[in-house]
Length: 596
Image 1: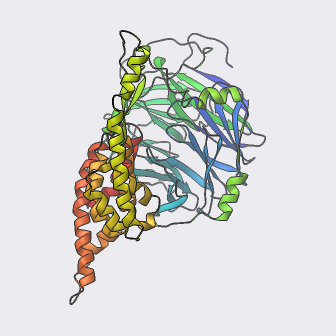
Image 2 (image 1 turned 30 degrees about the vertical axis):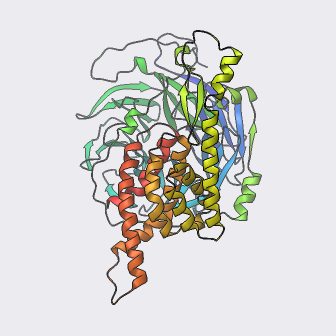
Image 3 (image 1 turned 45 degrees about the vertical axis):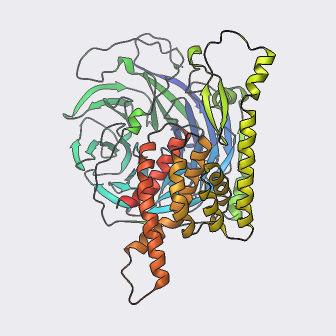
């Protein structure tokens, strides 16, 4: 630790031995700036709390050196890529291996979690980019086009685009909704090491071994800035949380840039050597680097760094003080990130599926997460996300109570003040008040389910579902869908025409369980039938009379109209915060082909 001082702008926070052999990669959690992952030639991944000396958790399972690391935005998961091309994802909160993914033919050189949903992108020395569905343990798409290793991957804030940077000196921009390359930027003259999207504007920053930073306008797809001054390769770039400036990390220095016009606001000497990653924690920038078996972390006091054209430097911070806790960040800026219309090139992805093998299962059984420091582990991961959240104010605390209505539940806040405690008789009276109504409702529901069950026993799922729909009771429809959703093979095109109007009602229901069932059903329909619907409606007319084909065409046409109506509902709800917001964002991605 550096000696205490009241005037330093940057200082070394700590240096420690991270692995028994050389450290090959490090990564910071970008949300909190307080978590650090290190990967080594000993094939292990170690998890640390920034500014604390002891390893929290050691993750094993790779049989080859770990080459690349990345935290999810929630910092509950970490993915590690190895020299052999395999990926392993660990659930840090549960302290266990989550997935093993195989498919690349060479070293993993870049990783990125999708901002929402269980998706992941990986780049490799084999020049390919793979887009993985973590839940299904499979590669969904493969993007080809780079001619050398893919060094960095970054998702746009809205999750629709993916930027890739490569040793071939190019940056490619991919539209995930249609699986095509949008454009390619070729102004760099050496390997591109890093790319990052601006948090709110249509802007992309890149840093290269050609010792330049470039800024790209994503509305007009042109270069708008190339500030000069870097003396060494640019290894890290990071927009400030408010998007007002760009931090650039290079060997032994941090620079602060503005654009339009290009200008350098400040240069801060930092003895971090070849910085490997950076994150912002409150008003402090954290940088990490590695050398042999050691990892070093450094702090830059951003209150003493110029971030505008003025000369005033405000604030003083002591370098012997611990890092301050970050304030909770909202998601308004991310939700407002809209996209301009784009014209995609003909360069496409290839789709591939891979079923989990017994070898994968064996790998997962042999992967472990050993908790080295129980106290730090509980503080950070239990309770969930304690590292980046603060307790609610007393006035914000509410005790939820459940109201049973039509078989669903609505969460409501209990009154903040109560004049007096209920006596036993009054409390019992309150409990009994809705009892008779509930009994009548449940009896009716049971009778209706028996009617549906009679048709189900004959094997006619379509007739059973039509019967449920005709009862005008969404709770019955939900019960049936919860069964059908567990057996995707039961889904037929006939079912879609009957159930899509019901799904529209479910998605707009006030009951959480109804919304969840509707989202699950719609996702299954989109994945199983949208390609069939699109192919059928765009196919040239057949010669002669083909009754079967005409019937299928009519069903596809009906489904297409219903899905178009649903896409508006999904789009309006995609801005929600929380679990359902993520589900609607994922549905919006799946429904994107309807707009083309």
